Image: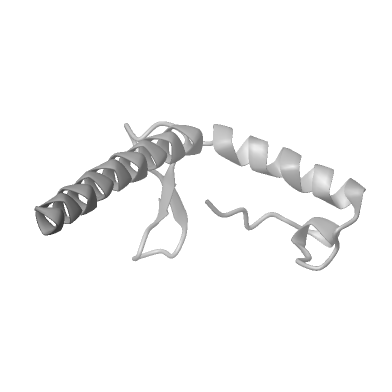
Length: 86
């Protein structure tokens, strides 16, 4: 996710005041509600991706994918360890 419209304190990476952090949290919440977009390589602009839902949907889907992958790897490691013990 990216927001090219940030300006002022919100655009600075080194202003950690409570006010600025609250503002950034609100900006983040708003970004989650926006539709998934990707950069059009021909124009260099962001284009909404039909059928992909919101950024929140995409992050939830990605988190579930990572969780599933971790479970598979953990099971694989455990089964490999069991083979070594036998």
